[in-house]
Length: 106
Image 1 (tube, rainbow, N blue to C red):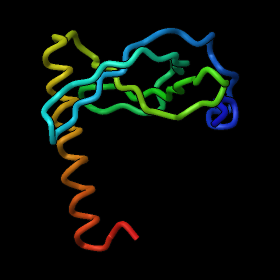
Image 2: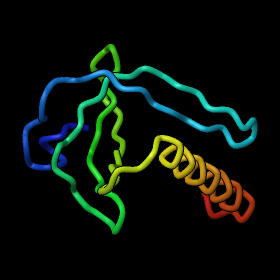
Image 3: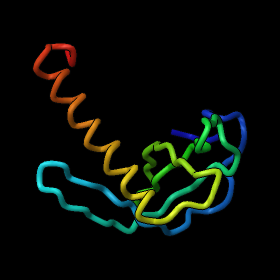
């Protein structure tokens, strides 16, 4: 995906280093991976607690994968952020299981 095509604006800034945290519900384990990302500084949407920003993970060969980065509007602890992410990943697992069992994933 190209940020200019998606947002109508040029890509903001150069790729920067970040850490992707992922929770595996079946094993109960967290993984951390160092990645390069380009973040759109302007949110495309917001809710009561967070703003949503387009983000692209940049691979070494230049390919990009689109993500949504969410930022809290108020200061929260790292443990609260990780717990929120953990609950979201558990919910995603349940949704995928339901869709697979119900045939909705076709």
